[in-house]
Image (cartoon, rainbow, N blue to C red; front, side, top):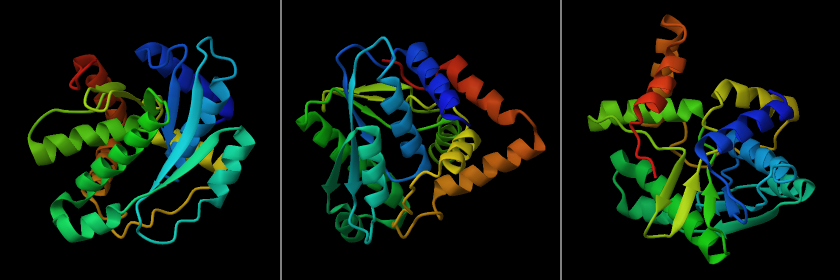
Length: 237
């Protein structure tokens, strides 16, 4: 996927779901993976020629799992002229002491997003952008169906009343394979996740399951994604 195609996908999603308005200040959650770095590229470029005038900054939550070299991301932010912050947290310690194995990943995600949302609000942001893509939506729906017995998926835009902040997901129209292509083409400075549970989660199991379904039923992923949008199984603002 080229940079121009990334811009096109992202702008289409912003317009389709009314994600960005004039005057928004948006914190981009940067995990260090390909998805969040693609989102960084997209919003850094679009702010220059979209009709809406908005500001961005990038934020990474250091969970405390160990070595986490962010120098490549810092350099990229400088090149893109994006303010970059790293939040030091004790999330790893909290998880190791208080959380049972079965709920580890869910609690980690909640704590990480809570730290980023709070930091963003403290720095004058009214929105936080996360890099969930099309495959993430499908996998979340399948996780909910298999493990919770309900049809659920996050929406393109969610307002959190308690935090008084809106979360947007401008990449949900993009298949993961396209983002992988973008990462390879532009040599994104990805950082390996230091979490000891990386790659052995329920989501990884569901990712493999969806891939198998797709291999055996060509076009299945597209149909599942369209079903999510058509039936609105997530809550709209």
